[in-house]
Every structure is written in structure tokens, then in C-alpha cells.
Figure 1 (cartoon, rainbow, N blue to C red):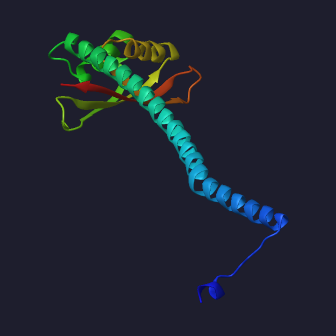
Figure 2: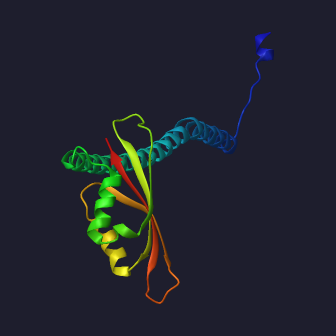
Figure 3: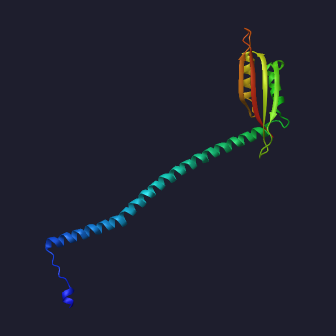
Amino acid sequence: MLNRIKPSIQLTARERYAVYSAALVIGLFIIIRFLAFPIFDERSRAEKMIIAKKKILSEMTALQTEQRILLEKRKAAETLLAQRAKNFTLFSFLDELAGQSGIKDRVAFMKPSASAKQDGPYRLASMEMKFESISTEEFISFLYKIETSNNLIRINRVSVSKTGGQDALLDALFQIETIEL
């Protein structure tokens, strides 16, 4: 009875070659699909990760350099603040500079303002100062004295307009800032 159930399949050499070739192709497909492609995908992902990490590293290096520069500037500013007179005020300093420049009598107004201390020990003091009918030389002299002082003073804004006469006189409005303790 078992002999009847057992089929006898006889393949020709050409058919056997076709079956073996098909098995080989299927085997290669399985190896490539489940072994080679994942390896190449992982390698590609790793290369992309390396590129991303290199970019992050270069950004971190740039930020570290920027931080070092800012710390050096902060130390220099703290040194200048420590060297400044203990009773220094922006109002008195600018009043003195106006006197040295010979334009103290042409000050139209001086409006001081100061911001409240934030997290640190420093506050920002600002002064709006207007001069009327000053010469170009006096304007430049005053500007030069502010810019070359070692008191961490910064001119935030300058507005200059020519007065009506032919004397080439100017009206100047300064907004000046400094850091105070």
C-alpha cells in the first residue's frame, strides 16, 4: 500500500539544473535580503550619525571659543570696573567731560535713568544728554573723550542736526550707557 502512495518523480538533467538554479537564486535572495542589506543599512546609518556628531562637535567647539572670549571680556570689564573711582556716577563723569570739551554751558538737558539690579551686582545706567549750538570740533572732542575713557561707557545713540545759522553749529543728542555697581 505504501508503494502506491509514493510518487516517483524522475527529472531530466535539464530540469534538475533548473531546480538547483532556482534554489540557488532563492537562497542568494534570502542571504542578500536578510544579511547583506541590513549590514549596508547599518553602515549607512552609522556614517550619517558620524557626520551629525562631527557637526555637533564643531558647533560645541565654536561655542566653547565664544564662551572663552566672553569670559575674557568679562574679566577685562571687571578689572576696569574695579579700577574706576568708587564714587563714580555717569552724570558727574559726563558733566566733567562737557566741561573739559568747553561745552558745559551749552547743555540743554541731562536726563539720567537706571535699570534695577537684575540677578547680578551690576545695573545699567543711562543718560540722555542734549547740546545746543556746538561746533563740529567740540562735538568730536566730546565724542572722543567718551570713546577713549576707561570707564566702560558706551554711546548707544547719537542724533545730530545742523542749526539754522551759517556758523556750521550743531545740536546733538546723545544716549550714553554704562554699567554701575
